[in-house]
Amino acid sequence: MTQYEQLEGNALRAYESMVNKLRTKAMQGLKLNASEVVVRPIRPLDINATVTDWYFANNVSSSAYATLTNIDGASIANSRFVGINGIFNQTGASSIHAIRITREGAVAREWTVDHIPALKNQCAFVDDPITLDRNTTVTVAAWHGITSTLANTFGFLGAVAEKRGLLVNP
Amino acid sequence: MFYTKLEGNALKAYAEMCDKLKGQAMKELGLGPDQVILRELKPDDLDFAGPDGWSLIVTGTSAGAAGWSGSNMVGTVGNGKWIGIHGVQTQDPAGWITQLRIQREGSDARFWDVEAIRGYENNTGYADDPVTIDQQTSYTIYAYGRTASTLQQTKLLGAVAEKRGITINP
Image (cartoon, rainbow over all chains, first blue to last red; front, side, top):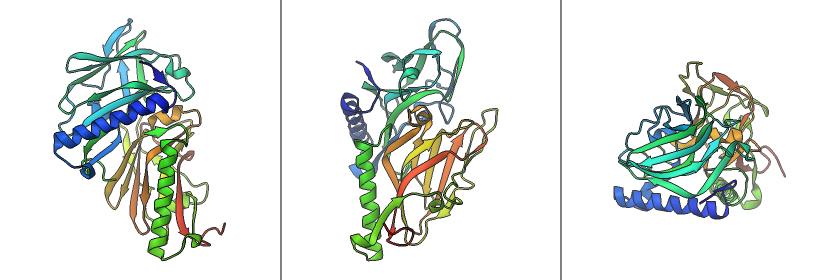
């Protein structure tokens, strides 16, 4: 599995496949028809961050995986189906090297992210997006070399499927 | 999802947005295709002052108590105009918006996470889910950020359909 600089080709196909999967799960899980389900961009709150924007900290100074602050590891909301297909990393000389996403207590993805600040758009799109169903626990841990604050410089790109009108009514 | 280039899905979405705007203008004004034009979105279409008038006000504090602000972005689209927004460009060095919420007739129509765009090579992101606002429709555009600031280099990209000659006669 690899990462792409642009959302095209394999990365775009993976994104579209992820969105279709989320939409189908929402329709089946919530017993709604296609017009009653919306797909919108992901927000930090959708993965149970305790902040509205991407604002995390690593309080571990040694090289190790540590859970990011502000992502509390609670369950995805009962009405939401979440997908992550990209990462942005604007941390400069990166203080964050890799990300580990744990779903229901099992490691679901480990993505290297320390090359992303050097990419043209400081973001990368994966060809193996992860989906997080409603009522599923999720934890995000990062591998750091130093203690750092990721102040609006690191976050995820993705989509959420949910009932129309719950958050937006396009 | 915000794309780094206006091509592929983003371009397709933009073209569909333009077709929708033009179709609505033709239908509601009772005009033929030659009598309706599409032009770039200007700040004063959204009640900002003048062609250089983008000034999104972000309310925030240094303590990180970031807030939504829509105080200067409330209005009603003028009679005879159909507006579409499909992109965001942010070049402000001091502060930046992390999220945008576009409310139409009192209901949230889009909830866009725009944090990654600051790292894009061209500081510009193109949405695959543009929003349209019809004539005589009220809107509020809320911006979210951590630093209290007035952003004059953060722009919304889009198009307007209206009767030929109202603003320009191409």
